[in-house]
Image 1 (cartoon, rainbow, N blue to C red):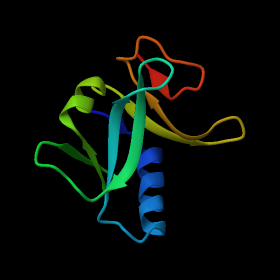
Image 2: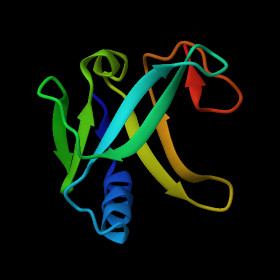
Image 3: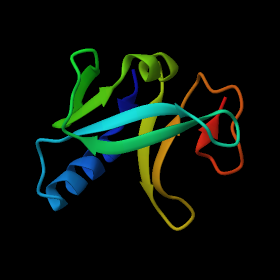
Image 4: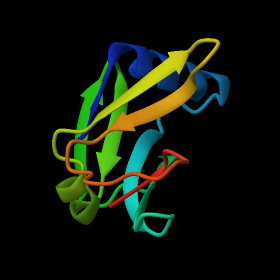
Length: 106
């Protein structure tokens, strides 16, 4: 399943606190679509299924559905806040090809 860097976990926790909903989990999913075949989806979710895989990083719950979990084995979610790069990014060793937008892979 995907892991979060300390920086990403801190940013997610900050966003949850800003929403005043610390009980929500970060859901990371892989969906069909995008330029290369699959795209990542991330959102806060309170509807956790019994089949979801769950982990905690720095006080942040992360949930992934079983199908997405297979495609995210060994992947890392990071957050950067700089002049040339800003936002969340996923480094996925299972992606054989990515597109120019950086959010689609196959």
